[in-house]
Image 1 (tube, one colour):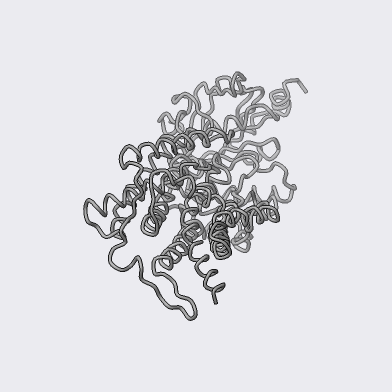
Image 2 (tube, helix red, strand yellow):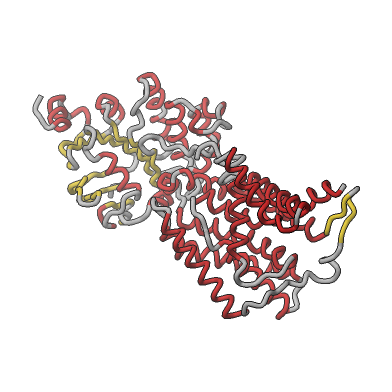
Length: 288
Length: 235
């Protein structure tokens, strides 16, 4: 039963990684842009939630509702005024600019909040509550994380495939010039996409901040898990991103069950193995 | 006042000048054909009017208002839709989604809706769930035309809609033109097929090397005049 338990915990952990990755996957799928500041934006959102919880005494889940529109606005402005200028045939400018942005966010957070590690209090007994599901016992917070990841991906898929905005996302991704002839303004569509990615980032930040300690410098490490999840899943596939998160999560818990030192390493090894056999990921888009 | 007018329209690709002071007009209800050989500047003209290429504002007038400097999305919102050269369907979208996105920037009620477009091109209704790019060339052209109609445009720009299609398919597509005009759109077609252009147009402009070399009503133009204007040599 110990193995079953390990795998279940790994799947639930995968939900957290999928949440880290879903925003990255969305942005990459629409504008082929890799945002190296994604992890730092998650940490920024976590601090924002922390401030709302500690200063205003809000319940963290309520704080997410307050933080989400703020993060949407940050994402929209960032894309419209800064990142749109970096998009073009050359892939280097967005990488350099978002790398710089990552450093700016980290240092601004260090200035504002110091290097102390923090945690968002989840309130009451939620942090330690657990449920018995047959032979395994799962924590309520990990379960909520996983269910949130599934819900986020279901909603993003609906947005993508069943709304007018989603059609505009896909059309712009295919051919921005022709999309313009349809009345789509690529710059605005990209800004909305990054805004939506920041909504997902806010949800990811809630679970990042309530489940473990965080400090201003942990963003890049989270970015690596997110990247690996996106690449394992196949660039641009949201369900693939969830699968990628789960693979890394399970690999990490299995690695840790064998030897606690192997946790992080096992995740990276699983990533390399998938890349070795499926260089384009598990669910690559047909027309890339 | 003309519905659409270019005044001394110029266009550049870097240092290369593609259009040299074009003066064209399109009256409401008219169908105008622009003919010319490859490289004459026909597509550049269309891309300038549609806002894909930026121009000085007063070089393109729509309803008397300068629109030359507007981006494509804003030109489209005012009611100028384009069927681009090479059809340019979105590969990630189904046939029906390709049609629906045609009204993204301009939701105006009028003659055209999914239903009436399917009525115009019934084959598209059968193929509505297929990816746009899985269709034959002629069917893709129908999607591209339907997509442009979905916004109920006042001006429809058709860039080389017969290029690369079989004659029988071209006939089917041109058979839709009378209904498109009835739907309220004035039409500009760019054609290399002179015979087809003369048949459907109220007026014709012939272009060569970025200039208009001849214009008039098809019935008033002689074969030799057109030949000279098209190829730059007397027949």
